[in-house]
Amino acid sequence: MSERNTIEKATFAGGCFWCMVKPFDQMEGIHGITSGYTGGHTENPTYEDVKTGETGHREAVQILFDPEVFPYEKLLSLYWPQVDPTDDGGQFHDRGPQYRTAVFYHNDTQRQLAEQTRQQVADSGRFKEPIVTEILPASTFYPAETYHQDFYKKQEKAYLEDRRKSGRDEFIEKHWR
Image 1 (tube, rainbow, N blue to C red):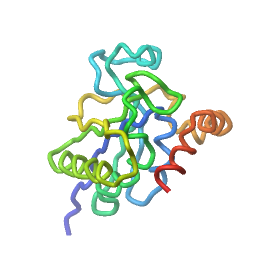
Image 2: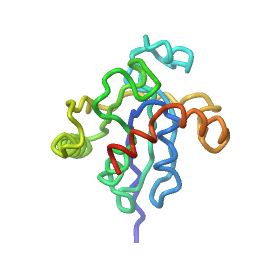
Image 3: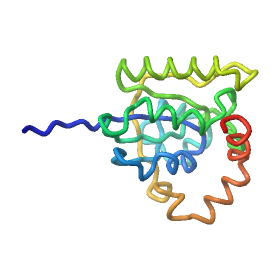
Image 4: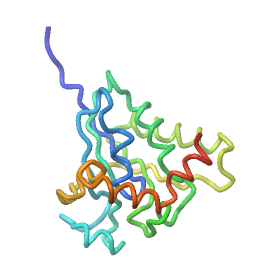
């Protein structure tokens, strides 16, 4: 019996990448989550570069997953309820283009599924405003600095305080539950 490599990548921008790791972490079929930067024009950007909003990058997470165990559609079903898909100026208290939402697709199937689920969100009636989350081709992904990786685990108190102040949880409760 031959073993085939079934690990794929998914890349999502959903505002502050600290808040985008935990929902996907420790699920069966998820083989790793990296916080980083993608979609911009600056090579090897740092957090200091990206936070200016001038590099074109967005804070994002790149997820390695086994689609036979955890299908891409399931990743999308976890992604959408983490974000405000109507906010074109950032996410919650994080403002600027570096915090805008996007699904970065790695193949045509991912693009089609992302577009389909974005339309389902639009048709759901949850939101009065238009859905502005972009569906974009994946580009070079630059891992963020080590201190950003698994931040919710390594700096739990700071993570919980930032998340509390952000308004993300109140939004999720109001619009997604």
